[in-house]
Image (cartoon, rainbow, N blue to C red; front, side):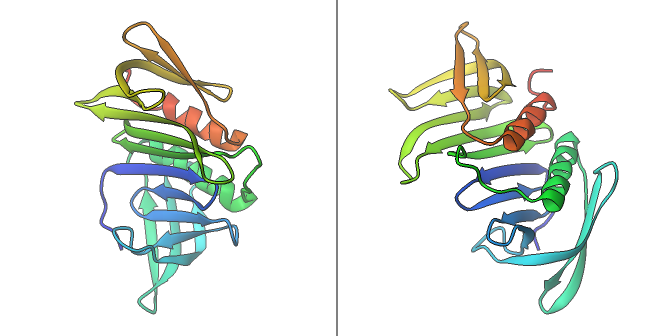
Length: 204
C-alpha cells in the first residue's frame, strides 16, 4: 500500500475512470460502477475491490476492507484538510447513487491540491476520436498560480482569482484580462470542481 502524504488528487477521465487520491488511491470503475483501491499507485495499476465500506456522517473518515496479499486488510482514511472532506462526500454520493458518463463529458480533468492549495489543474478537451480540441493548465510556482495556454501560441500569466460560473471556469489575470474556459462535463462534476475551488487557500 502507498504511504501517507500531504497531497490530494481528483481526476475525472470519462473514457476510463474517476481517481481520488488522499491517503490511498481509489478508482471508480465504469465497467462495474464500483470503487476499487489501487494497491500499486507508484507503478502499474493494480486495482482490487473494496467492501464493508463505512463513511462517517461528517465525511471526515472512510473505512473499508480489501484483499491484500491474499489476506483481508482493513483501511481507515482520515481527512487531513477541507478538500479531503469534500472528496469523501463525493465518494459517498457516487458509491450510493452511481455515476454514468454523459454525452457532454468531453473533458479530462486533473486537480492536484497540497494542504488546501492548488498545485496544478489540467483540463484536456477531446472529441470521440480522442483528438485534442482545447486544453487548460494552471500551475503553482512559489505558491503563485499561473495560467499556461498553448493555443493559438504559448503564453503564461499570473492568476489573481478563479471561480466557476455555470460551466465556465473564470480566470482573472493580473494584467486585467479575464480568461474563460468552458468545461464540457456533467453537472455533478462541475459542482464538485466549484466546491473545491471555493475551499482552497490560494487567494485568502
